Length: 240
Length: 230
Image 1 (spheres, rainbow over the protein chains, first blue to last red):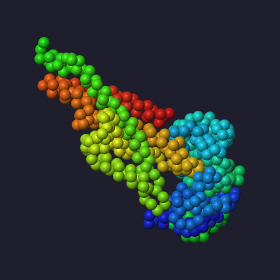
Image 2: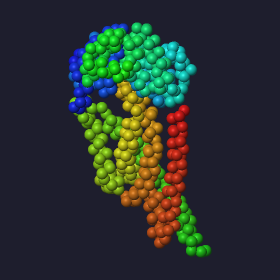
Image 3: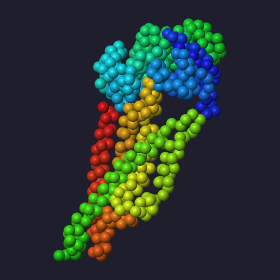
C-alpha cells in the first residue's frame, strides 16, 4: 500500500533520514520506536508530505506521490493523521471539526457528514461533546476527537505521531483503547510511539529507527525479546 | 465680560466659529475612515503576498519581493513627504483633496497594517495548518476556514491602535491646505491673535474622540478574550 524507496530528508546540513526503504502492506500495523531526535516523526510526516523528502520515492496505492505533479490534497484525503498535540481547530465546535473536511471537499453532504460524525462520536463515548469547543475538553477527549476527525474521511491508512505523548498519564489509556479498537477493524496503521507495551500489543511489525535509518525491524515478539543490534539493546534496557 | 470669557467668545461663538471646528473634525474623520479602510484592504493583500509559498528551490516568491519593497519604502520615508508627493506630483491635477489625502494615508497605513496582519497569521499555531492540510484541504481552504478566523482575534486590537494613530496623523493635511480640525484651529488663532483657546479646544476634541475609541476597543478586547475560555 505504501512503498518507500531510498527516502532521505535533510534540514539544512543535518541529515535526519538516511536512505530509508520499506513497504507497508494493507492491514499492517507498524509501530515505530526509537530515541527522540532519531527521525521517526520526520519519517511519518514524510509519508503524507507534511515534510517534503529531500530525495527518494514514496508510492501510495500505486501512485508516486513524491512526483511534483501529483495532487497531494487528493492523496491526503486517504491518509488520516493524528498529531501529538491534537491540533483540533480552535475556532470550530467538535462537530464542525469533524465535518469540515468531508463537506468542504465535496465528499459528503452536510447531513451525511453530521450523521457520520455523530456515529463516530458515539463510538468513542463523546456524543455529548458535539457542540462544545475544543478549549473545554481534556487532552484525552481532544485526542479521541482528533482520531474521529481523521476517520470521518474514510481513510485507507492512519498515521499516528506520538498520539499519547502530550497526555496526562491517566488519559493515555482511553486513547490507546480507541486506537486498539481501530486496529481490530483491520485499519492499516503506522504509529510512532513511546508506549512499548502498546506497540507490542497492537502492532504486527515494529521498526526501530535510530540515527535516521531503520536499525532493526521485526515482529514485536522477536524485536522486544531478542534484539540484535547493540543500539536497540541499549534503548530497550532504558525504556523497558 | 472678563478676559477669559472674551477669548472664549472670540474663539468659538462669534460668527458661529464652533461650526468650523466640527467641519474640520468632519474632514479629519472622513480622511481617517477612508484611509483606514484602504489601509486594511492593502494590508491584507500585502500580508498574503508576504506569506505566499515559494516554489521548490526558491527562497521567496516575486509577490514577497514586491510586498517587501513596498513596506520598506513606506516605512522608510516620512508620511508628510508621501502626502506632498501624492498631492503635488502623482495627483497634481485632481481637485478632490480629501480623496487624495485619504489615498496617501491609506497607502501609508497599509504597510503598517500588513505587518500587523502578517504577525497575527503567524501567531496561529502551525499545527492548525498542518491538521487542515493533512485532511486534504488546500492551502486556501485552510487559510480561510481555520487560520484567518483565529488570526482576526490577534489582529483586531493592534488594528484599532493603528486607526487611533491614523486619526492623529491626518493633522498633517494642513501642509496641502485641507481644512481639518488642526488647521481650522490654527486659522482661527491667526485671525483672533489668540492661540490658547482654539488650540486647546482642538486638542480636547481629539482627546475625547480618541478616548471614546479607546474605551470601545478595550471592551472589544475583553469580549474577544472571553470567547477564548468559552
